Length: 278
Image: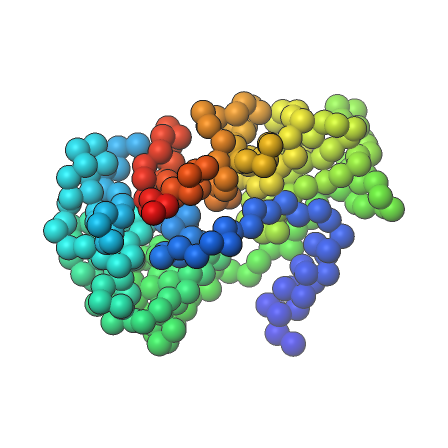
């Protein structure tokens, strides 16, 4: 058994003991890849004006301020630019373009799979697009081995106990514990429940208290559910979105409105329509 396989099996055996928060993908079928859309959208900033949107049965890149198309070319699928590279689908095939419209990977691949750990796009034909370096290669790259997480609590029976028993600023026992499956990636973000209150921590430091259970953890993005809908708490425990949504991606960048429109949320938490429901 190789080292990587052993570590993976060990992680699986460890995480079964803990409560992992997660947000399931929408069950409805959409003409795009939700997982990659959420990843690529995380690089969108307030002054990034080039954003894909669905118009008249095609995706176009438009200026988000003027509403005008940046390229005349429409695509069957189009995703936000990540590190200057945009994944598109043209004539049934996938490829990569740059922000000036230059094609850097010809659209000749019938399908793709996104790997968020690398991160890379697997075109299946032994071709991998490295999103960090912006290059296509014949081999996928490995960004180190996963780190075995050291959780801040130990579970005994139904209770969770802090490993650090010398602390005087926090209770030593709790009723519930929540973190994410990729804890080694967001190491330090977790929450503990005592009674009806959730205590949110970052590397052992208490950030805030809330009545809401966290469903997802990321820097400044803690997603919770209320009355069947989702919203986001910031790292001070304040709700940041003016409205609730039917679904929000873990990084807080893509949301599904109550009307089933798919919207991109920029860093000001303002909506930009990516895909209308009808």
